[in-house]
Length: 90
Image 1 (cartoon, rainbow, N blue to C red):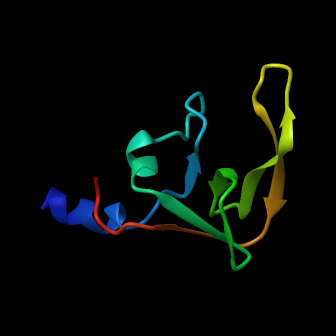
Image 2 (image 1 turned 90 degrees about the vertical axis):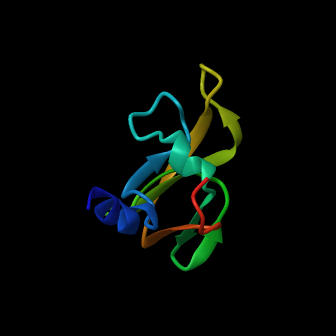
């Protein structure tokens, strides 16, 4: 019965996800399934982090880096729609 409860959630990306391994919202298993993001109806390929419930994405600000060598990001607000590009896990 626990497998039945996990199946619907496996087809839906998490509410919040980050590509930064240092973030508490980083999930390598989910990222391996190739998550796509539609933001305000347009496909975004440069999303660093998103949150569906709060309605925002963080995107890289060009090639600018902070003093630690991490990309600078800009927080954009709007409708966020994550989805899996390939439907099968793994």
